[in-house]
Amino acid sequence: QSALTQPASVSGSPGQSITISCTGTSSDVGSYNLVSWYQQHPGKAPKLMIYEVSKRPSGVSNRFSGSKSGNTASLTISGLQAEDEADYYCCSYAGSSTSLVFGGGTKLTVL
Amino acid sequence: QLQLQESGPGLVKPSETLSLTCTVSGGSISSSSYYWGWIRQPPGKGLEWIGSIYYSGSTYYNPSLKSRVTISVDTSKNQFSLKLSSVTAADTAVYYCARHYRNSWFDPWGQGTLVTVSS
Image (cartoon, rainbow over all chains, first blue to last red; front, side, top):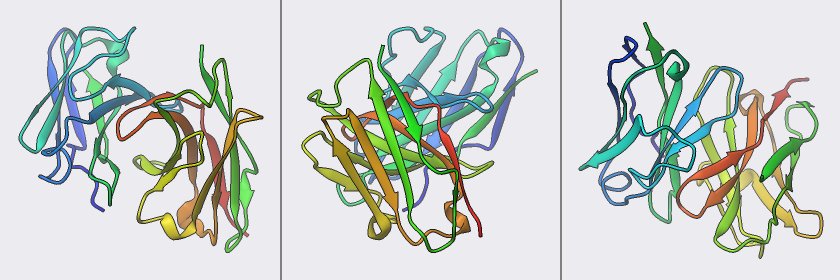
């Protein structure tokens, strides 16, 4: 069971937009609109930011958006703020035999 | 609002069984539509889903851990539990519990508890 592939790190300046990719296969990301994204600050529990590819939970800033094309899902953060600096993880359903897989995580640095 | 809290020993010896409990407050573990899951994170590494359970007792597990994992639920106490057998140093991690919408998202999460496997 392979993890989804994310870039190890991305960076951006305040006010800019960044995109984090999450690449899977036709057995997971490509087959189901069941990708979720989590934000994790150091020493804290992950927080749900996006679910079912592009839906935003109540209370999450509309600066966060999600999308998917083929086997790759993406998280875009617009208008970067200092508090966005954190680790971000994607997660996808991968079918009944494998169930759920996470990405390896991406460290976002706000310059 | 819904809150989850992990509890259990912070130190487990190699080859023994890791046991953790998650207590749910602010809502019922018997809510329809939701499963209840365990996820772990080795120090400095990424997240790994362990398994999830429905209030009826229906479970599904990560295939890579399935042979060693048992998740159970106690609806009378609004709790669910994790047992991981034959642990090694590779099982050292922060263990989180979370509400799980079947096959999809986890929210909210407990604060996590560090379990170290060492003699």
